Length: 207
Length: 207
Length: 207
Image 1 (cartoon, each protein chain N blue to C red):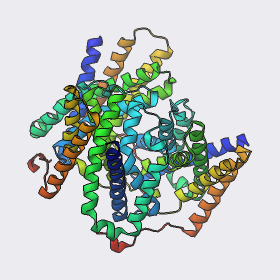
Image 2: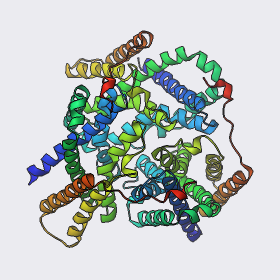
Image 3: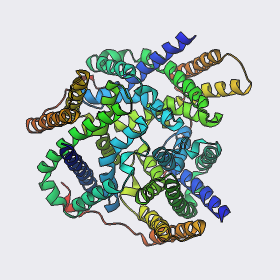
Image 4: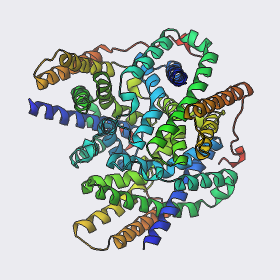
């Protein structure tokens, strides 16, 4: 099971990096900007979480492995943008799995550092969506996750499952984690194919 | 007096959350985005201050109370946007009180953590205006506080009062704090009704 | 040699502050916004680095000197914008020296705090370019360093020299540091006069 979780981590990191690099290419950043956006999209959520819970230095800065992985993903996206865009359905699947993993893993790390459950879940959510928000701000776009789609909600469902299982003293942390990631993954896939959206306030309220 | 300070904290948190939620609604974010912007506007300044002074975990992550309060303010704003906008004069009064409280409280927390006075005041100012800056960046606008109005200046006046009283070894920390908040509040109210602005450099300098 | 490094630190801080203040004036921020942008451009990279390596409080908050220097640079730019813009060639030279200093100094501070070399270099790069990225985001522009020019690359060359010298156990830390800053400086000057750019992905890939 630990191997499955490691694979999810890897898949998520690559998918997040590719999403950052793709948006960088589409916004005409140069090759350095593409690498920066890939790295930031993949690690920013976790880095901010680690700063808040006091895990210093943040995991992403403890070895060069994540940096190397994201730079490789950036170079691939830069050199073969058409291919990456054609494969975006696959990337979205990896992204859905990664979102679930980051949200669940972030929640568990916050709990280990003594954060109370609701705020630990909030930090798990930040781990999942923080990188994407920064990616959009740095490329001059409004954060996608705040305005459309059913993205954060899938992560919230997974986090809720983790916290409920913990409150019920269910044993088998890794089993619960994998079930939660699977829940997030399925909700994301349904949401993508069903074009789910959360409501916005009616337009008439705009001044 | 402690109760008065607690009330100011509460009023400020609600006002900041409502201002974040209102701008989120006006910029067509979905209901999740409205909640995120409400929370970030209310807590981001204090979280960054706590990271800088080493108060880990930041106050906003030590319990779920602030999160719950900001989510409630966000839902109210989402469901009754017209009402909230009609009441914006009241919200601005709460906001003025909250600005003063956050600036003074932020300065005092930084002093307690051993930051020297001028930089403690800078961190108090960051506590007061950091959330609003992040609110504007995340909703795709230029930070209002950096370009118009007399907002940060009211907070700076309150902070200066706190630091001068401290340099003069005046006793009665809570009395000074409340006087400083009142100063900020009065300046803000005058500034709103008088449309005060700080100068910009003359347009001719623009290239 | 220590005095030369101190002078580079001073020159870089002033140049970064002036670049922040200039962009603030050009984007019609008020005088408070000009001071904020000057301070943030000069210190944000180092502050984020210090949070990540656990140097609390960050260097910029340990005394009021850097704040005073950046506020003075902001006031100068605000009152004499035409003069500052006319002198922008000189400011760019100071900026090139400062970029090298911040990148090298940031790398060495990260190494001292036990960060492994590649990520220490990444933090050195963040020290050099983080402030400029935040300056652009806060003034409503896309980060310049991610999309054009040969700016980060000059810093990366200097950082690489520091890390290679360290791997070869070359003695004389300050001599290596000054050689690295000089390398960054020369590359930047060549890049400015030669209009060097990194490649972007071909336009056809844009959707």
